[in-house]
Length: 373
Image (cartoon, rainbow, N blue to C red; front, side, top):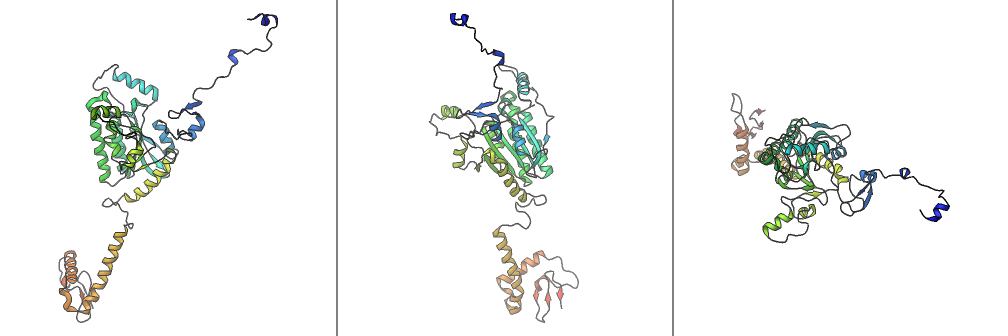
């Protein structure tokens, strides 16, 4: 304290405990451009930086809340929990790592699967949570994914998966690698029933997940700037001993080279997926498993083919009436052969299939050989 302050006491004082504090999490710094963002504003933008458009990592349940219609979600496989079957230990025991991850995230494992509706369209959605052990794929992830596929088959609805993973979970060794084949077989069952699978790749999608389920979608969508690949660029460069193109594992690079179908901003993802599901669901409606086309909604080529067939069948009797001697022609022969192949066995009182057409006495016979006088 100076001599002046001793002579004239300060009249204005500020107690330290009265100073206001900024609540934790009120402001968020963008990882890409370092711009400071107001949390509420960032939440409205679905965790997309309003300054540079960088898509930040989000939890599985937050993504599901944005995607599914309010109150429509029902979780699948929530009772499945991970086990330390191998009693694995590196610098820490696997069971201890699981306990820490479960406490920090509130999740039992790295995949959340829900059945619900998206703009009133039934759908099953699986979402990886990168905050749980880097979204690594273990036995629980594989089992929940398969249960999601089975539920989609049972409900005859599309299946959507959002990938965000570092790859297979090394602590589960072979059990983790087994999930690559297990999930691929489940998706094959889905494809056999003509049910669409949309795979959405988010940042990052690497390792065993990218080498299996993530790249098996009927439509593959990615978020802007997502890193997608098998091994990291440093590992690849050390292996091939070559300088790799800049951004060669980015979503934009993969789109340019035809590895994915489209890049969609997170804020538009729900609307885009709903439009895709509406189109694909019609192609995979229950009861039409032999074709991707809904009944009565054939392609232009099919319509032209049907028109040509109808015209040919309508003109065939007229041609036969114009000249009975032309029945040996190629068109008449093919028509007779087709009728003979489709006709049932001859019955008493019925005209043989070879006599289909107009008779010389003016009578006609129908496609089953019955004579119409």
